[in-house]
Length: 355
Image 1: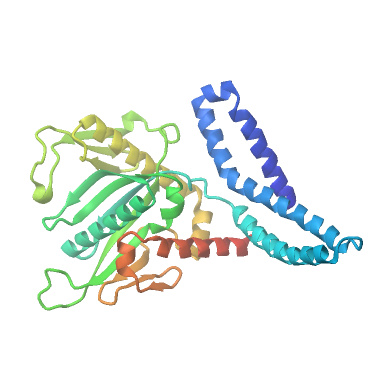
Image 2: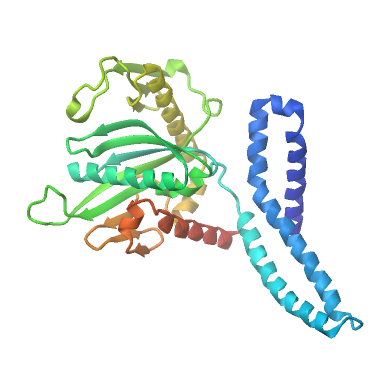
């Protein structure tokens, strides 16, 4: 482990040196990549340096405790500190083991989330709206920036589908396990008999990618423009600003209509298309990784039921890790870390077992 840490420390020092060179700063592409790598190593390097510091203090205290010429009270104090430092060393070792686990290269990316109403008609659309608001509250608590890209509402104000981006620190690492089928059990407002209905919405979490990472041939695209529409299909704009892009080779279709400018909607639609194509490519390349993830906390496949929100009991259940919490209202109001932290801990523990 120490050899690996020394290697990482040397790489970090080299990156620090390179980032100070004028020619690197001028090459924005290279500078961005090196900055990301540098930031990715910083936490583990700081942990390693603290580990070495504690190790040195431990050696000094051992020498002091064994020095018979030293004052007995000083030697006794040194023995007490040795016990405390051993505990610190054990804690640091566990922390470093977690930091050394293979990192998902997409963890630092911003994301695009797509929520679609599934089984349950209007009630599913209202639940899709609840999920969107949950992610909006959580983003606000994390000081992330959320931006609407496209939405299609029903007459009750629910979302038949909604697409939005979230920008901020380590967004994908926190929300990547939200992908899948979210199920709700509650009495709909339209239910006169007081019966509990089960509805569902699907969530897709896509890492956002740069233009240079996913090349799109303009000849592969069919671009249609039309007027934006609101609930019930009525036009909400007097110009043809809404954009629908069809990627002919894959059959993927992306619609964006939230901006008043056709150019901005086109740019947003291309961003979503790149993210979907990137996800498609990842799924094809990393089938083995996906299989491992499926065994741990689910694959993120949007056909997989991952969570149930039971309103009558105020209960949330994450089926992947058998987690049950009776804090549904808190979670929907944005305290999503109550679910995310146990998921990440479980995932890390499984990786440690496999390493």
